[in-house]
Amino acid sequence: MPSIFGYWTLRGLGQASRFILEYTGEEYQDVRFDAINAKEKWQEEKTKNPHGLEFPNLPFYVDGDIKLTQSAAILHHLAKKHGLAGANTEEEWRRLDLLEGVLGDVRMTFAWLCYGCRDEASFSAQRPVMRERVTPVIKQLSASLGSKQWLLGDKISYVDFLLYDVLSNWLELEKDLLDELPNLQQFRARFEALPAIKAYMQSERFIKWPLSGPDAFFGGK
Amino acid sequence: MELAYWNIRGLAQPIRLLLEYTGEKYEDKKFECGPAPDYDKSCWFDIKEKLKLDFPNLPYLMDGDVGVTQSNAIMRYIGRKHDLLGKTEQERVRVDIMENQAMDFRNGWVRLCYNPNFDDMKEGYLKSVKDVIAKFSKFLGDRQWFAGENLTVVDFVMYELLDQHKLLDATLVEAHDNLTKFMKRFEELEPIKAYMASDRFMKGPLNNKMAKFGAE
Ligand SMILES: N[C@@H](CCC(=O)N[C@@H](CS)C(=O)NCC(=O)O)C(=O)O
Ligand SMILES: N[C@@H](CCC(=O)N[C@@H](CS)C(=O)NCC(=O)O)C(=O)O
Image (cartoon, rainbow over all chains, first blue to last red; front, side, top):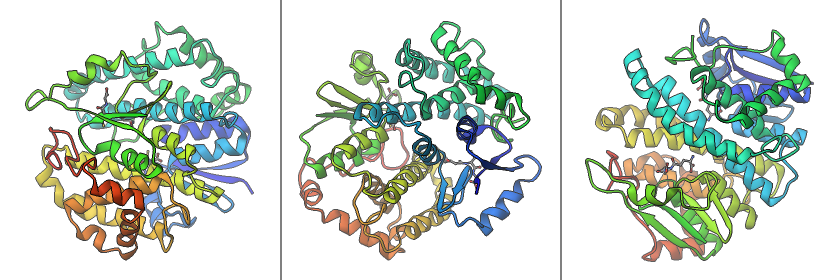
């Protein structure tokens, strides 16, 4: 039976998992809830809770007996299932845990800016503040990648999917974010050139936009 | 080891509890930000870039040559050393879920505590957090610990969050017998009991000085 992946009709917290599902060729049912015209559909499903989720939320993932919410828990599950969590050494675990946290902060900064600002004035005021906050971390990520192919080295792992996704969000807003960081540009090109990813991104299944929910001032519409 | 954080409970308290429980020898290094209105943080920012950390932040943990940031990564680092990340696949999945569920719980809580309109928001928060806590109670069920039979890192995080909520309104936790028992069970773990009775244990403040709740 194919697994089931449920999320809104947008990229958001679901995109890294969708990339992994596509990359690994896992057979999955892509259940999408319309975030703009039919929000109540999810509310209904949430109340009925047909999959018996313990903390009903989006994204969710159901794979036989495994019923998950929390995007990071879903990523961990997919990573273990498909061998995308490194080689199970202490050093690699440490690196994965660290990068997962850092990339979460980078995403959070973007979300604060996009969801926290209600009008053009506050958005324009906050934008440089958040850019200044995220810039050093992007540089640290660049240093951490160094000349490696992927964050762990030669082998792709789940944090690479997070990195690609988080950078894509920021780049929609700050086009010059990576101008002086060629290794991250190359990383993005390398990711997009993965055959399964390339095919996915050219298909109709791929959601290019919106990045965020309709309440967001940027990326939602 | 050296653990460094602000002079508050905040993100570091579960790590402190975990270090005490596992009997790790550690120095509890605390930075203090200045008074209102500037809340000067230079004591930290002056050294931030000089540390041997790839992604400098607070809290950080130094264990010999190894430097770790990101609170959950620190919890997992210590947890791996002491086999506190779940012993079965099912326990490990429950740890993954709870780690993030607890972070959502914490984010909502911190947003309230640091909000300038704390007084207006409190009522609404109390209402919605009741459901959140009820879900945690249901998830725990009649298990000993959140992952199952075995104590794991998420118990340290949940204990701390529930304890902080008791300071807002004790009935939030009292409404659930299993959560009350869980907290008691946790407090009775020998090293935790000893820690809480010692003068190393920090009762407060929960939050930094700009917070509207838990800043004392
Ligand atoms: N920490 C959770 C956050 C989940 C979350 O906030 N989901 C948002 C969309 S990004 C949502 O709309 N959830 C549906 C709901 O709250 O019912 C995760 O990583 O999965
Ligand atoms: N995701 C990080 C967040 C860390 C964080 O936001 N730390 C705050 C205190 S709670 C800080 O003051 N960091 C110092 C800095 O940003 O330089 C974690 O879980 O450790």
